[in-house]
Length: 370
Image 1 (tube, one colour):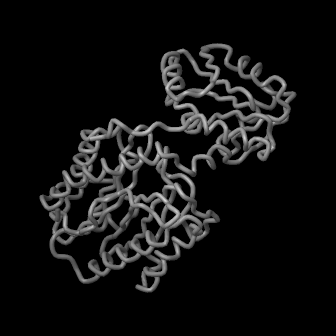
Image 2 (cartoon, rainbow, N blue to C red):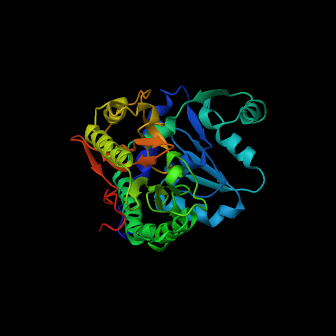
Image 3 (cartoon, one colour):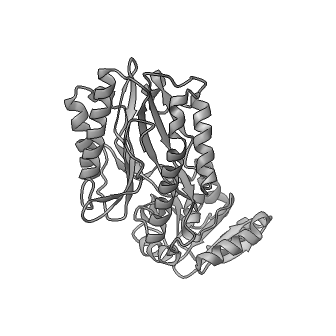
């Protein structure tokens, strides 16, 4: 079950760090419109809000549906934010709040062209609008102790759910049936839900990295790829395990061995100060040496947090360098349509010395192994 003593998250320091970034982003205030970023800063989990962050004040605006919820969640976060709940007049309140702001930042990656035109012509016609890039998103890269604890709890929940149901793989369920049982176990163990739609891919379907569970029945000789995660207090986990059902071919066993070695090498390469592309290379070199470089169809990993796919990218083209308390995945794979597919994935937290693996489910390919 989910621990009841998870450490608090330090919301106040998030505002301090954001304000320290405003001048470098070329703005005097930031209008935060992306809901996941509003949640990161205030704890608010609703579906409609705007957050205006100025050097000395912050203004949160939402509608009547969230009158009580916003007060409770923002109050629990302990941040100094003025809350305005209005069904009409939200524009006027935000415009008044931004009075005197010469340069107003917008989240360029998350504001549509139509929204920008509306803000420029209607809301803030006398204000210089600045296209900022990933100001809040960059703050989210480094996880505080509360965030790490929640992601670790989500990982532990996914571990426990898999342990409950993996024996069913040898009993011939369909992919859909097994996926439902795994998802149900995740919820029963206390998670809010799944990080993403669970992947259960067997036989030829396992050669499709993002196959959706279907009516195919799992059978002897299959490789079965399970990719799934849990959500705890908004934070995601991500894990992949591949199981062999009964007797498998020499090629399939080689796939398991090669991907296992590749994944271990990638995890071993993770450490603060290491370029993310070096982790990708550590995994990719082993698969290349086996002659299957063209069958490794995706990058080696990605960041995890309030979203299942966050920065940094762990890829050949990544320009990121890992830092302590980044949380990333390491998930190489090999996909051969005539044999199936293998992917193995862990979620890890980066440390100065290396990394700590948060997904601890055994990597045995036998679904009946303890």
